[in-house]
Length: 419
Ligand code: DP6
Figure 1 (cartoon, rainbow, N blue to C red):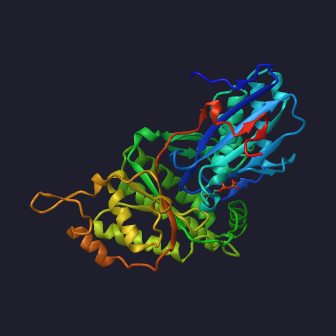
Figure 2: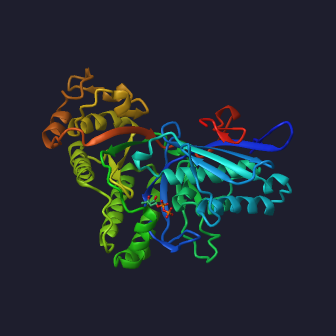
Figure 3: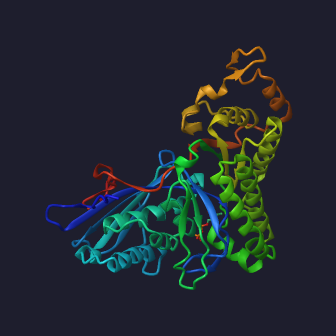
């Protein structure tokens, strides 16, 4: 692999890189740590990486011998860069790795200025910390010229557990590992995005302003109070991991979908078994679950699979050829007053070809509402009150992080462009 070096200014007193990194959504959920500080999980997890055009974190890091302190701006707001923070652990971790890799560069001692932004609203509650820490660690690796290795995933893991999976594209497994120092708790690709390119996702962002228990706090509480969690860890997850990997390798959507939905339900069952319980899904989330099961029944096969993280928003996996029909049903069941379709329906365009169906006489029919199947769907699905969804994002399986050209920089002379 040819590594693009970081940008060095003429006087060689300043280095800078800009990168982007994807969001990932867990299919088999990580929930619970065996070591808080090193962020070592109690079970393996598998996720799918989403396309960066629709959802990504972008980060610029500038190192300079002229900087007095390390500084960081997240979405234009300056954060405290504390000595014992996850942020500092990631910075020191990559610097240590660069040193071990033989880097003698003086820039390893320079202070850094970091600016990071998400290209999606934080209100979407979508694994922004995973993309953010993956982008931070990847950008630091580019800055110091070290390659993307499994070892680098152990550093991203110490920013936020799920971040280690965002260092790769496609389908990714994070191994729990058994060693006390966490060196075997690494993320590893299971299959690339190109292996299953028609795997798409609709994210239904639910109107909900309530503050939830953070994943970090929620999982701590589950580990100490849930009586079900150990059975999940010992017995259920290992079986599921093996079966999911088989389903991904064989591009078997039926098995993939069943495992995905069952694991989401089990994770939320553990959250409820926590004392006091962690309630992440709300009534709209449950209406989405019902909708997906009813919709699958009407199609006579499984076309859609939901999963929910530590919040009420749904991620629905669906193959490309079924997106238009599913979206039409979602819009029927969850109507909106939003007249601005660009704001309401974000991300990839939905190709109209997949709406075209053959009539019994073989003629094509563009109207999704006139086919027998859709009459059936319309009959079985209960229309919900208006505006339960804030908006919908359409995306698909995507690649891992990459370095961007310098004209994408979020910093100028070490300060955010907006300042
Ligand atoms: C429900 O990675 O955000 O999304 O390691 O404490 O930062 P920390 O937690 P985090 O937890 C993610 C939990 C989850 C499931 C998953 O992504 O696997």
